[in-house]
Length: 312
Ligand SMILES: [Zn+2]
Image 1: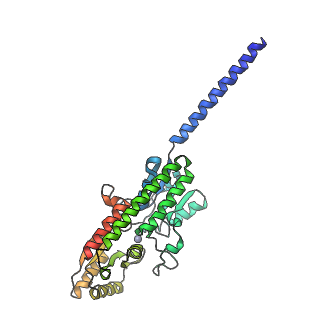
Image 2: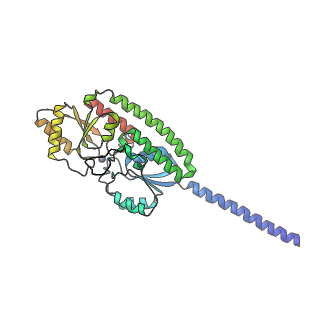
């Protein structure tokens, strides 16, 4: 009788042990299957997260190709995405002008909200006289700085999602090699152009980091943000500069209306010189997903080819 009672207790214990082990295993599987929900603002950052995280996260890119981040306003759907997200990556440095206030409110409530520009030492940032006390936000145009942004994204993901830590850090290594090779291609292309011909005139002042990294003099008709309007003074000044320096081409941008660049072309014409529009550059947005310009590296190579070939 005593033995039977003991056996009963033992069986009961065994049953609970097995049950506990099974349910633990179930929980573990549930956690493994649940992907981190990541939201990225610009097309450049969305591409960066895709390169690092692959299919390990559920990624939502807020802005579509051709959208101007300076003017972007969050929709109701975006706000829901922000609220459901485990992690949000944005550029910072006031690039996403209209989102900043919203982000600041969210930051106060805590959560994984990261400005990728925080991954770059302030001494590498360009200050702008156009934008008092602020840094130029167009950091992606220096591939060297974009490598820092890639490290920042990979390290944050590795800390938050430890299950896939090794994957993120391996992807980072692979992507840095690709960025190194893209940097070489860009530098080689730039070297086809004599130094005095390296003058880049665009619709808005997005290319200062590009100019510093690859040795171009850069001038934009609008300021750092597309919010400011070009003045007639700017147009006449630039027209004179173009004539004095025999600049071959000026450029429009996919995310900025072309009316100001057209006004500049007319001003140059009225002074007796024809200047060609060197085509569209991708400035604050990547191209469509189905094209090489739909990735950051593809966009950089496309831009440098277009710039150098048009200025020759
Ligand atoms: Zn811009």
